[in-house]
Amino acid sequence: MAVVNRANMEKRPDEVSGMFDDVARGYDRTNDILSLGNAPLWRIATVRAIDPQPGERILDIAAGTGTSSAAIARSGATVVAVDFSPGMIAEGRRRHPKLEFVEADAERLPFGDDEFDAVTISFGLRNISDPIVALGEMYRVLKPGGRLVVCEFSHPTNPLMRIGYDGWMKVAMPVVAKLASSNPDAYRYLVESIEQWPDQHTLAKWIRGVGFARVAHRNLTGGVVALHRGRKPVDPAVRASAARRRAPRKTTS
Image 1 (cartoon, rainbow, N blue to C red):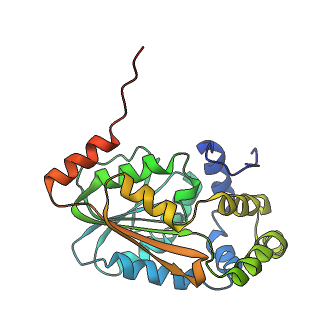
Image 2 (cartoon, rainbow, N blue to C red):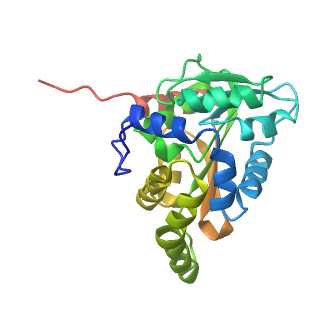
Image 3 (cartoon, helix red, strand yellow):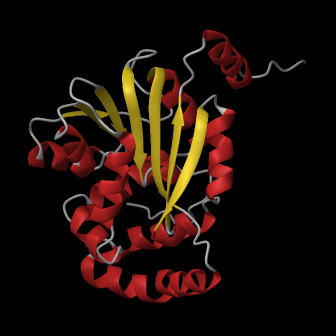
């Protein structure tokens, strides 16, 4: 498999998907190690932000092996776990046979309009070729009043913490990844993708731009991770205005 050498905004889905196929079996264990034990805490915060209720239908995008999906499902909600990596889905089905897994591209979700009470994505938005298109798809499949929760790496807000974090990412993480992961190059991509990802306010602007209202974010671990939230408006006039903003502009010849 060709390794993704640069984590830019023109990612090739086949390369990124194949990279995740390679690390599927040990993915969760390696994440726990590389996050210094914070990954379960970030998952708890994300589930609380989603606030899943019994009987709700919730879409978990970039679900990987289904660890977060299973945590959401314990609330009694019905969870659909989506990922574009066949290897991740195969591992998820092995671990969580009761969950529904769907192989799909987040930019072209195979669901109808207004289907889900909540949509969430954890540490996957930056792996999508066009994250703004994916956010538009999340908006489309949400019911009016539905909830969006995005958990993603971000930018530490404290200068001293930022220095320490940069040192960990560039010096220590590659060494730990080489020891803990079956594909250390995949975690080189991880570092690059985090470095090139925009800050909290830019992501909030993207979320508002596709039509979400009540957009806010909360920093976790000093901004190493940020939890963004939004709502699909209930008012049809507001939704219509958002649809006009998302519509592709016609070009003149």
